[in-house]
Structure formats: C-alpha cells, structure tokens
Length: 420
Image (cartoon, rainbow, N blue to C red; front, side, top):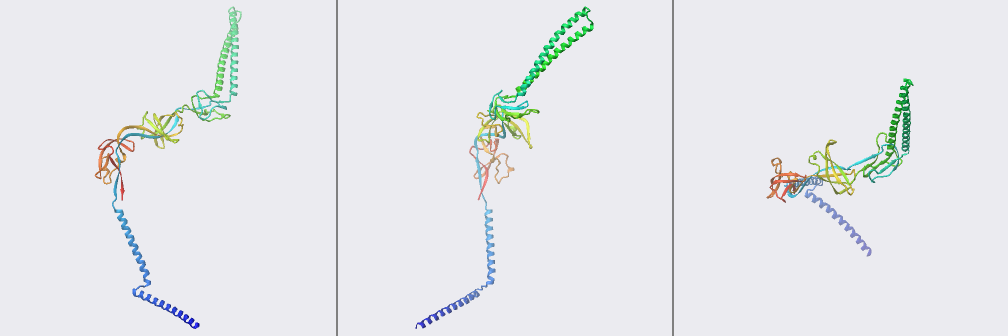
C-alpha cells in the first residue's frame, strides 16, 4: 500500500506539469490572436512611435515660442523716478591736485673741498641761524693762515726797510744838491743822487703794495678757514643730511649740497595744478580745503595766495599753478605730500536748487529737439507735464533755480523704470 501511494503522488506531479505547459501554450496563442485582431505589427510600431514623439516635440516647441512671444510683446508698465526741489546752500568748487612744500627751503653746501671732520645735526633736528652744522678738517687751512700772516709780517718789515732807505737817500740827495749849488760836485753826481731818491721812493710804494697783497692773502686764508665751519643760514628744520664724518667733499665745479633745511614747517605751501578749463574761476583769496593720503579722514584748510599766468604743458594738457598757503601748527603735514584740493569759487546761500538729472530728462514720447532748452517735467494726473525754468550756478549735481513755476518739495522727473 505505501508503494502504491507514492506512485500516485508522482503521477499527480506529472499531470500538474503538463497542465502548466498547456496553459502557457494557450496563452501564447491568445496573445498572437490579440495582436492580429488589433492589427499590431512590431516592425511597424517602432516607426510610429518615433513619428509620434517628433510630433509631440514640435508641438511643445511651438507652444514655448508662442508663450515667449506673448511675454515679450506684453506692454511694460512705466514707473517714473523723481527727485524733489529743495532749498539749500549751493557751493561751487574747482578740484585740483598738487604737492605740499615748505615756504622756504634752503640747500646748504660747502664752498671748499676737504674731509668732513664733524657733523653736529641730523634729520629732523631744529636749528637756528648761525648754528654750526658741520666742520671740515682745518689743519691745512690753519697752516695757510699762518703762512699768510708771516708773509704779511715780512711785507711790513720790507716797508720799514724801504722807508729807512728812502730817508737815507733823501738826505744824500739834499747834500748833493747843496754841493752842486757850490759847484763842488759834478752835474752827473747830482743826477745820480736824484735818481737814487726816486728808486727808493718806488721801493717804498712797492713795499706798501706788497703789504696790501699780503693782507688780502691773509684775509683769503682766514675766509677759507671760516668756510670750513658750515653754519645754518636760517631758523628751521633739517630735512636732509647728506654727509657723514670722514667723508670727502669736492667743490671743484659746483657747491655740493650737504644739508636741506626748511625754514618753518608750521607755514607751508600747496602748489596745485589748475586745469585750463577751470582757471577762469580761480582767484587770489579764495578759500579751499584739501586731503592727503596720510590722513584721509581729515580736511585741512588753505587759501589761494597766488595764481601764475605762465602755463604748464604736460603731454598736451595745459594747467596753471596756484599757490595756496597752509597752516601746519601740529606739523602733521610734510613736504612732498600729494594733496587733493577743492577750491571754493562761489557760494549761494539758502537758494532753491533742482537736480541736474531733471534738466537732462525727457519723457520717451517727446522729442528733445521740440522742447525748450531749460525744461523740467513733473507728473499731473499721472502724465508728464513740462515746466519752463531759468537756471543759474551749478555744482555738477544741482543747479540754482532763478525762475520757474516750482516750489520747494515739488517732485521732478529724472528717469524712468520699466516694470513687468
């Protein structure tokens, strides 16, 4: 019995497997029948799919182009930008650049050659007039003074000797004249005595001249010795010291500069270059302010003291030099600093001003050549309305209003902004 049961189970499995295969076969037949019924052909369906996708893509691109055209052609909303008429002080300035300099700068040098023996000052030292700055070696110069003094003493001794000889010869000549008067000597002897007197007188004059020459030589030697001591000619500050002890100084062709002194740095000058387009507005006495890179947040005052007529031409650009006086009590400013200055050329207090942009503005619907030269625009009932004005001075950003139907606070059109 158990054997029989096992055989039955095996047979049952075989039946199930055959049933499954049969169902699969039927399913394949059904699928092919369905495809035939619908008229679906795999060789043709792939091409149709490609055509379908192409059509969809073209439709999508056309739709995107239509939307873009609609967005671009949509009229933008115009919004006007305005700025108010205001009452203020109008200050006109001319801008220029320049350099700060000491009012009086003195170069101190040596007129003689030699070795520097001592240097008594250095950079930034304050000096007074007559103060010793340096001294050259004086050993040779002192010897020359001694020699000149000896020559003067010898010349004086020669004069005394010549004067003594003159006195002796004068007595001889007198005696010869007395003897000749009594015919005791010949005329030739008298002439000889007289000629000797003339020679001794000439010797005296020569000795006196030699004294003058010797005195001049002594004075020259003493002057050269004095020049070995270099002194300050002014009260001031040592800007530069170009010499050290032991250095040789050669003054053969020109005087070498050993020190540069600024007479007084509490008073300085600003040398500014004014453009030729602005020079007509600049005059002596006008106030100015300037800044330097060393103190960018500080504004220093100045006053124009002189405007040169002589032009300066650099790379085809014409400028004119203006000298501005500067107070420097705290010694913050130094020679050579570059300064950017604004010169106040005119000032109007408590006046109505309009923005320059309003004078340049014209609504898009209006041709500029069809309106007056000085016209501004304001909004009335949301529409631009022209107002004729007459203007005066301008500082580049705002212009003085001389006449026109405008009031303080009134908004003027200066630009437009398109909003989507």
